[in-house]
Length: 187
Length: 187
DNA sequence: ACATACATACAGACCGTTCGGTATCTTTCA
DNA sequence: TGAAAGATACCGAACGGTCTGTATGTATGT
Image 1 (cartoon, rainbow over the protein chains, first blue to last red):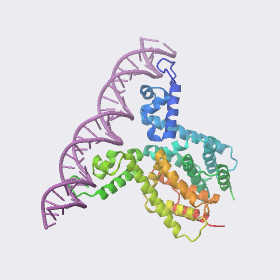
Image 2: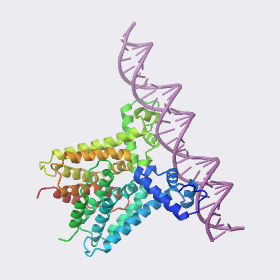
Image 3: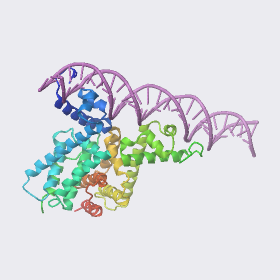
Image 4: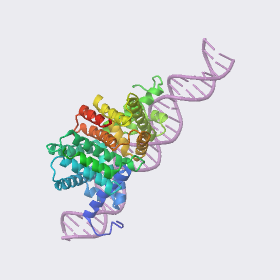
């Protein structure tokens, strides 16, 4: 996005680019690397532009996390919609979405960002509320202790995905996925 | 630790206090709250003292994480030493140490710090290496897919512990502990 | 023309780090 | 034994850099 001063105005594109660059910075270098300057440099705009689109740095980060949660939300709901078996439906969707994200894009786009959102206390509150609401809504079909263990294991896979690029042990994801899904079925 | 200038010199106590204060700050307010000034203010010393004991801020944080990993290391080894059953011994110890930390001190002293250490890329490398070494050393007795799921679930409990104070769903820890341990036994 | 979308320049706070100086501790040696 | 000498512990202030945020100027779009 070069020569930004004299190009055509593209407010929505600029806003989108800022969000993407902030997310990428958080993913690749941690949340502490997400400075306003770094985001703007990566997006090819100046701070004036950023503060035009977002009231504060915190508002930018909040928007990034909100988008992440919305995407997770949509993916989980989509997975649940194609599942005829009521029992454990939410847990199966949770496992599927989590594992497939690691399987498909080997870079694990969202993992680092998701975990980062749990370390900053302000973001943690948002994410905790999001997850609690999901669990509460589906407690009728997903309340069994075994299902809880499966969900916890899926959470553990988030962490394993984080460590993957640093020599951490990485499970056989397809096999693990099969096993976890099998544990969510009745009997 | 008041009137620090004219009191008796207590280098080991000061060093220890700095480490504790840095850990507490990271636990309660996130790693980004660990500034040199904040640590020194909490410890009741000046920045000069801190830079006398640690070559840099990074060296201080590295020392905190190293202590955390050493403590985990010792706890796991101690738990393994009292376990007569070879199969799944490491996994059982891992589950025990993780769950008991959350059970005993309800503040979950180490959880937030452990998770935080996974977000900063430099710290992540250390922690990943530590965990990979552990898994590799015990692959003879702890290589079964079910054991891997148990370990992943224990990792998930780290995250659940993080969310606990923010309204996140908290499992019935004693029951969960029993179930996970049962899954590590033969048959 | 007017609102929107940016660039530019700057302010104020805080960051990690350095450094000179002063106290206390430890060793040396008469 | 005890005083000088050197090492260690710590203070306090200052520095250069980077941070978020603001104020203002200038182009574009309608």
